[in-house]
Length: 167
Image 1 (cartoon, one colour):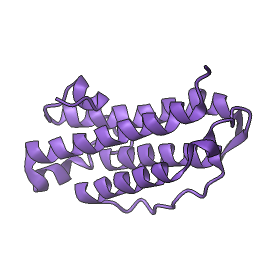
Image 2 (cartoon, helix red, strand yellow):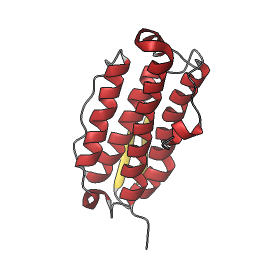
Image 3 (cartoon, helix red, strand yellow):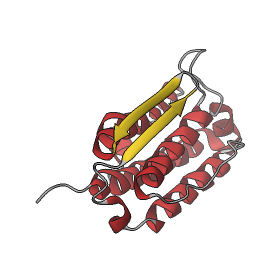
Image 4 (spheres, one colour):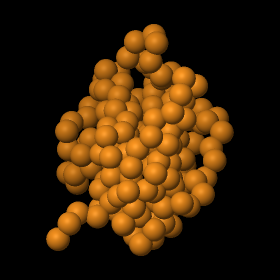
């Protein structure tokens, strides 16, 4: 049996977004609410986005992938989250959107045209190549960067936290 695009997207995004929410919970547990809020501006290096933007982009990557494959309208977010609670609400809203898109809208879209538009041009894909060559790597880049920023700040996290494995 072939692997369907739904299996490569929605469950993967769901598990990792839940894990990302758990990472933010651990940040609060480690630093307290006030201390954890200060982490949101942390960057690995000056020209990279801060933690808050890493979470926002991870959410956008997941919802836009599913929307592009399914033809659903993705929710619009204004990127105004400034607290852990607001970022967790954004993750929850993204999870709700992912859950609302039926498997039948994504499976079979391996050859769907997906064109990403950037200021410097366009990047065309077919559905499956978009998922495996752009959407998943981009999503995990931002989730991993968020994890790294929290670890760098001293939040006691491990691979099980990143993977979303119950402890």
